[in-house]
Image (cartoon, rainbow, N blue to C red; front, side, top):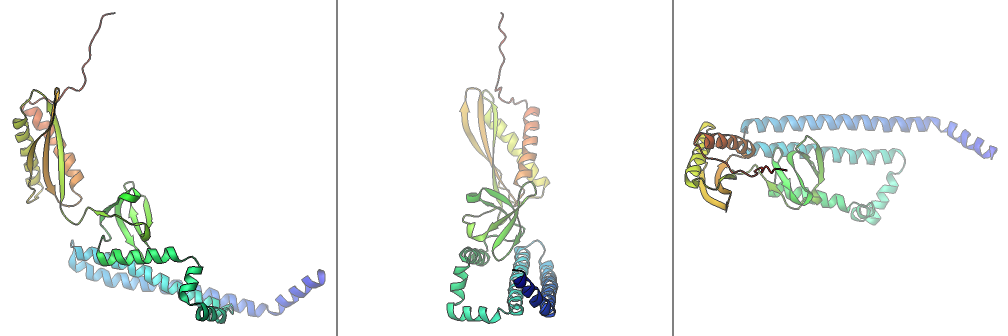
Amino acid sequence: MWEKLSGIGTHLWEKMDAYLIALGKIALIFLLGKLLIRICCALAKKGLQRRASRKQGTLSQKKYNTVITLTQSLVRYLIDFVMLIMVLDVLGLGGTVGSLLATAGIGGIALGLGAQSFLKDLLGGLFILFDDEYAVGDYIELPTLSLEGTVTAISLRSTSLRLTHGEIATIPHGKVEVVINFTRDRYTLFLDYDIAGDQDPNLAGAVILQEIQNWLEENAIENGEAAYLGVGNMQPFKTTLKFMFKVPPLKQWAAERAVDERAKAALAAAGIRLPAYQAGVWVEK
């Protein structure tokens, strides 16, 4: 055993210069590859951002932002693949890899390495890009995954989504089935308000509708199409009134909070009572 170990040590010592040269080449490949990735990504981002800046606030700007992240992802994959081939060549496996590719074919090796999911994600990303389902900056919901948030990046195989509390979710494109996009068109907001059962619903409806119209005018929202839809539900102690109006994308939450506050104050000022949901009864012992 000692003789064998001594032989291995002698062989390693004799080949030490070759091993050090190989390690130096591999390190140089990684350093130059990472530097090339940073330079190419920066150039692509700078050039596309210059074009996107000419179309501020438009859908084209979002498309450019999407292309930026997609281009950066493509550059990383391509350079990493070239780096892998070069490292294998330094290790003396270039001929082996070439013969394998020639005999088995690229598709067979990809399937052998379990790349089916990667190909599925890649094709899904291409369909999302071509169909323009969403872009960077859009607020979307994925019902099948129970996720909702703002798109921060789209790569070749996944989408990054910033959730409500700031978390970043990475979703493979192969998992994206149904997409609800909140930022492509105006949002139709439906609101319900309850008043006491003995109050006049028409008077309350006119008061709340006026507050909705005032809010739309103060926020310079044209064609809000505000409407009082009538009584939605009647019970002995309450009457439910239904309203509808349209707001720009992503303004629905602020609009609902603001109109709720104004409607409550306006009903109180008009002397219209809200329903009493709970009453206490005092009983002697």
